[in-house]
Image 1 (tube, rainbow, N blue to C red):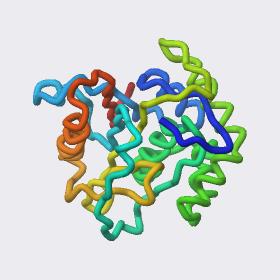
Image 2 (image 1 turned 180 degrees about the vertical axis):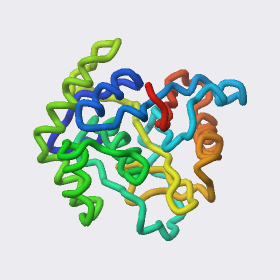
Image 3 (image 1 turned 60 degrees about the vertical axis):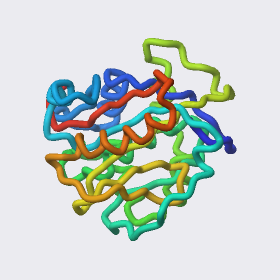
Image 4 (image 1 turned 45 degrees about the vertical axis):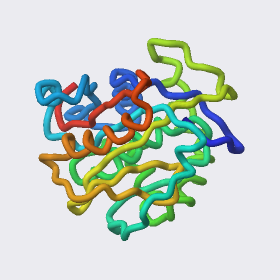
Length: 227
């Protein structure tokens, strides 16, 4: 779930209720929220509120996963991406990727933490944003509270966790996989606001195919809908 680095946080649970409370406390608007995706059948996808703005995936990882090579393609300059240098921070980084790539559709509270964070980091490089986050005690404290509020007790921050969050977003008509452990976003082809959920699911099914026996996959959508 996180890299071994100078700092490690508690893992965030894949729980929309916890995520909504977390981001709302930081200035997230009340007319959007995170919702469970219960399955990939059309009927189950139709239960997800619309419009979908981003899709989060929690999946089991192994050392071999990051030994693969991903084709390097031109990434839209409009993509907001930050690297992960804090262990177990991937859940919060996934939330920041989901929000940061939808600022035009999310009215963050004036003067709120989230508004200040994205203004402060707008012109930074992905690694500079990671350093900013690593030194940000306000976000670290909010993350710690959220990580402790789940249905299950979080493991110790020093424990080895083999689950990881990534985020899928639509920017400039492209579907991007945002993974702070990678050097840059991964382009998965074209998409649109209307087809983002379905196109993300197609990419997610490739993750599932790599580990079909695992039941540790969770998918959560950010949608413009009242929680």
